[in-house]
Image: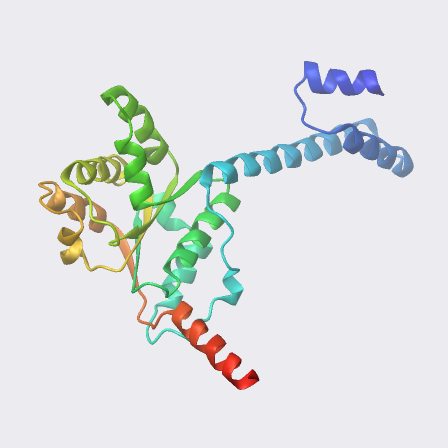
Length: 253
């Protein structure tokens, strides 16, 4: 058995563990499977193993973190939110296949990041490549590159994935060079690959972040051309929870 396992692993490149192979063959013997059935079972098990490893690799690259489960999202809290639109985007992921963008907009603490992360997680489950970052961190990463070739290589990190999720546009001002880099990302993904963006700003207010950026008009135009906008009108969940904890402490005192 060890010789067979070594041939499968080293010579054929199979990913099955020794324990999985032993269990498969034991099941085949007990169930009196035919040679063809054994081969089919071996192939199915190997495919599942490869898909699982591929998911782990893509999840590590995505850096999505561990958001609060979507079934714990309180849809009744916002005064206004298009739940039907979000669930359609999340269930079908058609926007990714079309290269459309998604804008999640609302004040801090209303769940934009959680909803954006779950779009990314859904895409991972469907076999897509994803990358998550705050917009300030992504631009800082690009600005740290010391040469044009290095910048071009690093841009692939943000241009290549099927879905790019950028969080927190609006909290940190950007200079014109950072704006140009963001424009390059948006432009190269335009109508080919999707961006999910969270912000607290209307499009007309983006100039407060990208001050003196000559590319601002083209940037907004490209991003907004094929964009699903999900506005969330709500008070901050975090502030509400803090108030609830404070009230509980008073009641317990």
